[in-house]
Length: 187
Image 1: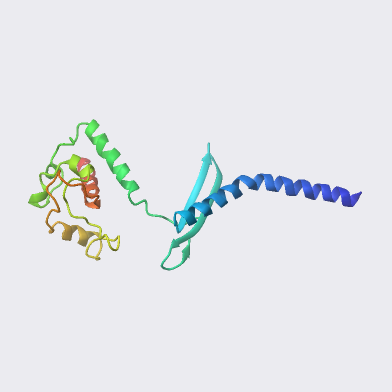
Image 2: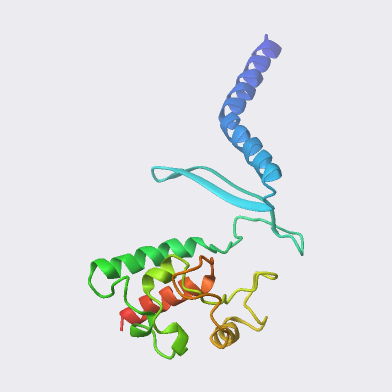
């Protein structure tokens, strides 16, 4: 009888544990599959319901070059997601009447090259400014390889890639200037 009772308790605990872990295991398997299919080296995820974290995971590699795993304390760059925040902030300035989309950038940012002065905020947002990029396509880092300040100085000496308003080029320079407009608008 004791063996049967112990077996029942063990089976109940095993069943309860499997029920509790099943959704997380399914999510785990899904994440691993997606990481393989989409060649995602590492990620962090948190699912929050109300005020409770119902699932969280850190998977894969944070730094492929040095084989550093993702941990709960890994900080990832938000990259282009920052453009969304900058765009929203700029549109809030438009709503407040502090800037207009057809304003030339030279009205809001000091010390820009003459060829940049008449480029509008709208052209920056639409990536049709014709500006050269502060990011190096080959490395993903700042152009010139000497840091952001150096890249900013270098890119201002480069010629426009196209006449403003004519050619779409996805460039970080556009949103860097939008960020400067946002900064200067608070002065």
